[in-house]
Amino acid sequence: MLVTGHSGQSLDWIAEYSDGWLYYPRDFKTLQMVMQQWREALTKVEKGWKPFMQSLYVDIATDSKVKPIPIHLGFKSGTDYLNTHLKLLESHGVNHVILNLKYGSRTAEEMIEEIGKKVIPHFS
Image 1 (spheres, rainbow, N blue to C red):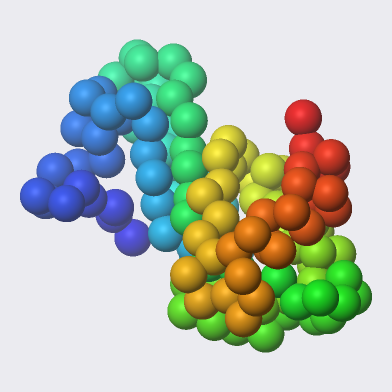
Image 2 (cartoon, one colour; image 1 turned 180 degrees about the vertical axis):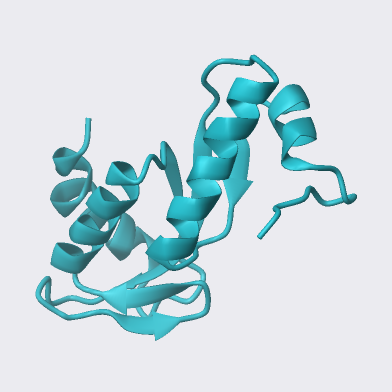
């Protein structure tokens, strides 16, 4: 799988001229392949380190133990699984995750408060 930019540019072009790469959520096998391509492109254009970012739609259940249920470009789950998922993304080299609450079944305020209490403390 060769990843290309929006206008058909190669990943080398993105590595050369961007401040980083914002990507969609994918399964971990695809993510691993994409991350390898990103590192190779950065090495090839001699740009050193640039961040790899990903968006993720989440709907945070009131029960922290709720297992993930797929939603568009993400999942509904409790904070326990959200933490596990984010740690996996971190271990694969994802530097930033944009949590999108668009499909939330609770108010954004409630979910943000819960993220602040039960998710953010697990990350530096």
